[in-house]
Image (cartoon, rainbow, N blue to C red; front, side, top):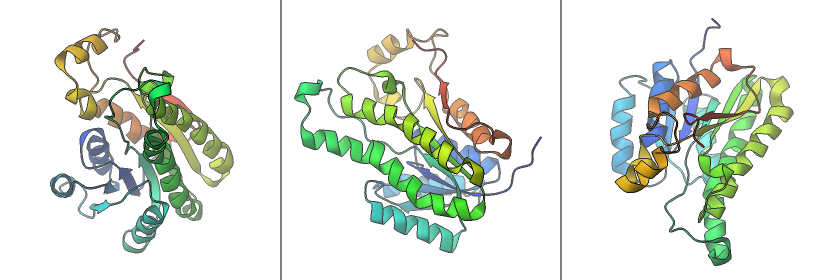
Length: 248
């Protein structure tokens, strides 16, 4: 097995749900997480208390990923206070808008969703890449979605998640020779976060699409993330990896 070094890992949306599970797995693997969050100070404080039992240098810092200047400031702070960002998990997303068909979606709603779900991952990755280049090592992971295949009422969200594959593929081609990889990990119905907020009826209907008839666990997604960002995952590049139990 190829040994892993301890690295600085930025996890956006890292203070709850799947993001927190990924941060905990990275901390268990010996990395130091930066938990990026937007507004919920209480959730951030609770998450940081938990994470620091695994990674004493872990921090939770607020950032609006749709603001490129705020993102650049966070990357600069990370470099100065902790070290270069070498692992980046683009997990933060905007969802929960009432379903709207394409002809009903306003320009402002379209832009708001893309600002977080597509522009945000781009800005964060753009800010972290120079530190990865200087280090000679980088792992970029975009958290995708089943919605990337298209989903009624969620045009902006689906479009953003689908576009991440193109972004990851481009990064893979541009930076592979500098020790940097980029992949999309696309979870299915996971027992965390947004899925748990759905009504029991909707969850039951969704799970009928899964051959095993069960939701995935956040730990199952986090385990794949941990492998992809490890030294042993270095030949995985430009891929979309589904963790969805064969959902159709």
